[in-house]
Each structure stands twice: as C-alpha cells, then as structure tokens.
Image (cartoon, rainbow, N blue to C red; front, side, top):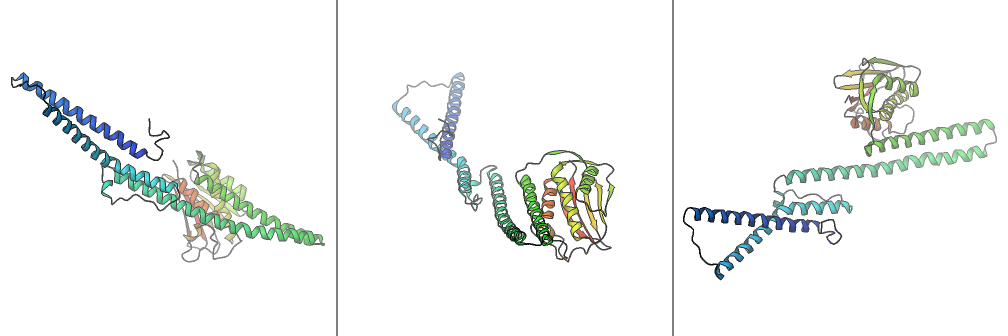
Length: 344
C-alpha cells in the first residue's frame, strides 16, 4: 500500500519513516551478513576456520543482534524523517490558512544534510505567499472603495439626466456619465493586466522596440508627442500586450501632468532596452519619485484625476520582464519616467 492510499491519509510521514526504517535495517543486516560470511571464508582459506555446531546461546545472541540492529535503524529513520515531519506540519498549517506557520530552523532535528536550506526556502516561500495575499486583500479593499465612488456618481447622473428638462443640461449629465464609465473601464483594465502578471500568464515573443513605441503613440499619445528613437531597431523578448500597456500608461501619465511637449525616447543600454517619457510639466515634489509607483497614489502637483494604478502597473510589468521602473526630475524642468526591460 503506497503513501497516497486513503488509509494513510494524514500519516504519510510516519509511513515514510516506516519504509525508511525497513530499508536501513535490511541494508545494515545485508552488509553485516556479507561481511561475516566473507570474513569466515577468508579465515577458513587461511586454515583458521573452526567449525562448531549452532547452539541456543548463539541463536539468542543473533536475536539480540537483530533487535539491536532494528532499534538502531528506527533511531536513524526517525532522525532522517524528522525534517520531513516538520515540513508536513508547516505545509498543512499554511494549507489550513495559518500564514504564520514557519519551519523551526533552530530545532536540532533540522540539522540534517541540506535540510536547513530547504527550510529556508520554504519559509521564504511562505513569506512571499503571505505578502501576496496581504497585498491582494489591501488591493481588493481599495478597489472596492474606488469603484463604489464612481458608481454612486453614475447613479446620481442617471437620475439627473432623467429629471433634466433642458436638452443641453441632459447632454452635460450624459457626458459626465461617460467620463465615469471610462474611469471604471480603465480601473478594470488595469486590474486585468495585473492579474496576468499574478498568474504568470506572460506570452513572450520577439518584439521591435520602435513598433511598440509607435503603436503606443498612435493609440494614446497626444498630438504634441514625438518619438526619439535611439535604439537602432533593437529587438527584445516580451509580452506585447503588457509592454504596450506599460508604454501607453507612461504616455497617459505625462499627458495628465505635462504642460508642454512630450517626448518618448527609445534607448539601447547593453542587455536592456529603455522606454522613457519626458515632459515639461511641474515635475515631482521632493521625495515623490518612489511614491508614484505605489498603487492608488495620486501626484501632489495636480493634473487630471486618475485611478492611481497606471504607474504601479508599469512597475510590475517592468519587473516581470526582468527590468525596473524609475522616475526623476529633469535638470531643465519637467519629469522623466521610464522603464528598462531585459532584452532576453
């Protein structure tokens, strides 16, 4: 009966220890028997063999030797299987929802071979899962709040449009309603793109940086945006949909805050390709360069209202492609926000 059979259920580690004990016992017994027989044969060959009948004392001594060997095998099996029992305990607790369960690395039972390294890896995995779940709970709570507000305004605008007798006034309410719908649609789109990263659903293909930038400018770029391609038709491996969204979000961010021209720069930096968006707007307030990549953060220097997920998603997309996102003030005024992506 194997460890996956129903009767063993929650006792797989004990079954493993039982099998391990039997194997150790038979291995040691085989080694001892072979050694004894080989040694006896050598002695007889040299003329030192002594032939005596097997007595009850000899049988009793053999029984005691087997019992001692079985006890030794049990101790060795318990020592070897102890870390596995600790791993099973932590796995079961995490599966039951206790995200604080961790391997006790200071336990002397864990000091077997490479088991401490395995314990570290499991604890790191549990930390990442715990952080991811905490981030998702916080994101869900924030998204619920962010969606509730525009939905409430949409209901009011619908009522105002119904009650409005003036056609012009009704048109204004409908225009406002359309803006709210676009905002909710943008929020849902950002969340769907983020979920692709969470589930590792990236589809990497060979992309041409110039084509990605040109498509982003055509789709969301303002009329005063220009393309400065310094990449010499560089190619890289990436998810076309996500990379296009990241570049589009950079342009959208600049469009909301820029006061003048916008420039999308493509720069080849060795093993990486950079997409940078520069503008002539007010730039970042002091210490704001890192905060802009936090979810639902809205800039301190004004600009059009936004959901606050655009640059946070840009950062995640860049990291999912082995790169980074960065933001800085330009020397002559304005801001520079960009991403660097690994080319392979």
